Image (cartoon, rainbow, N blue to C red):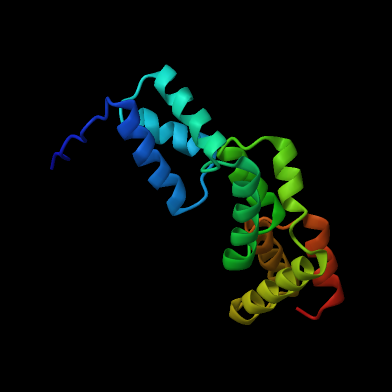
Length: 160
């Protein structure tokens, strides 16, 4: 089935109003907004003008977005720092802001979250062989974006 063709926006004022609404709904990365503006059919000059207006008006703030992203992904989805960092890089957030935003995660909470997800997974894993069981838990935690050495510490200090 053919999707109906989306209506292109040619008026810069209309695009700005729509972009303001898009940014007010939730924090966005500049690249997300840029992609959306191009999707609406705007020219590069108009896109950059709108981006600069959104930044100056406070609708678009990369640092605020990065901090919200880090806290949200850690608290809601229990992602590790590696996976969060990859997500921010995918959204083309600068490395300086990524490092600053990752400082929002408390190290005690981080360790507790890793321990909690490993305990939850350990109750599900049916593997009898201790080596294979440990490997499965390790792979699971690495898939969630946690650091290898921290995973080994948790597995060594607990009876999972």
